[in-house]
Length: 305
Length: 318
Image 1 (tube, helix red, strand yellow):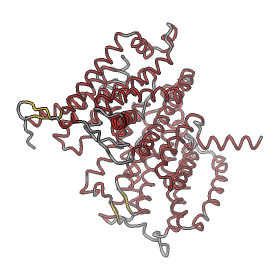
Image 2 (spheres, helix red, strand yellow):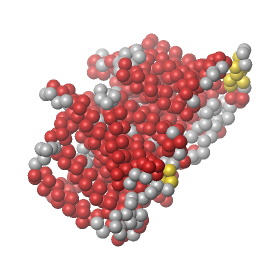
Image 3 (cartoon, rainbow over the protein chains, first blue to last red):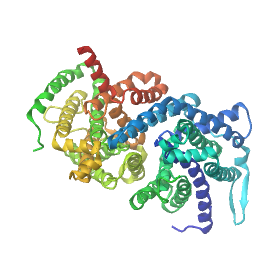
Image 4 (cartoon, one colour):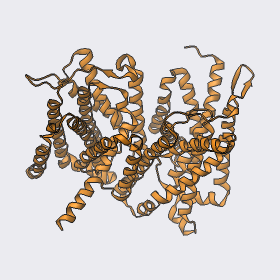
């Protein structure tokens, strides 16, 4: 197969753009794992809710989805906090008392099954509330085409999505690095009991982490809504990829996740070009398998926040 | 051979007798009940086989439906392309599922918790993509219709639901019994020791990787055979049977029923299938209730339906 250089460049750009979004989704997932030791299999559903909330806001209030997406993200973040208090809070206590490998395993299983239950519930809720037919969120920006020299062109919406993704990632990094809450989150991730000793209210930190994580996923859903279709099971396609990103980057490693997001986005885009689109979905898993073989701790080494 | 004591067999045989007495007259209740019960039994064996991995060995799998599908497709393709008798084809399907179990089991030996969960999920996706994309072999998303039924023996025609029902019943009882023997054997104890503390098992000289692979081989074999029977019963299969949703459905049976008990997953299969049938008219709320049920069981009754039944029995006895 002959690949035109322009086609290659186009796919690289597309890969980087979608990679930024993968980064945003993956970062949220990795934070939850790093701070709460929780594998959230419902993460994709918060992404889906973000898209639907944005859609609902657009139809109710009117306005551009790119402006309303952050609002939707905050609303979904609030849902995240509610779920954290309702479902997971009592389990953290149990987890603290649990000892040995078996206890950890059963705890893991409990978290995974709870979030799987949550995922099923949310998908059906979306089905009941918004119907099964894929919708697209109208935005004039998707019709606005940016032309690059050399015959490359893509919609302004994609460019904005990419810029928002990068800005969010930089903002999150700064938040974790320089603010008091950010430091408390990192401390809790490293050692919850020590963090508690120095006066960190870890349950509050869990709430904040849940808010950030689900909010970020929702933001990604909101800004991709005008570009792709919105449908109830859209989260299922994303959650597997988000986990691939997180594992490739190293569980709990924020910077690793961001890098892995770009890596997977790029590899998928190029994989689609060279192997054909039908095998695009395998590329991510193949990368994950290689990473697990060669560097099980992820590309940057896991655990670091 | 497996170090099974005699009283294990006698102790459980009474439950089997009860099950047999309860299940033999089911076809009298009509075609619909027979049909649902056949599907429940095939799912029950699949869920119980998954229990060997999840409940006994502590290896969470989110891709078990893939092995069910491998069994179904292998037997179907053998029968349709090479005229292999389904009786043999189903068995080869089980072996083929085990080969796939090896392909997943060996590379994932060192993985735990979420790493293992996501790898098994990825494996399921890869099998699903293969079934969709290798359309010269599998007819892709269209699926394969017109699968030959089990060949009749003498005057018995397995195209009839009643005759097939007894095949499925025999298969279920034998499978669950074999799995039960396994869990009571020395191998079963070793698997449980891996679940309880892998490092401790290693330190006392247990060949942990070998037994983990062993668990994968057994669990996938039974799932593959169930898949084969399913294909020759419904006589139509499509890649749908290997999806993540299907894997989660099977895992839910294992978990909601009560994992690490073998009986629990059987109960889980019955209850979830029954629920599915009862909620037919509230189709759109089906999964809502279903998700809620998983959450409630995990939060308030992690030992599952079997645990609840035991709890009630204990209260009644007091």
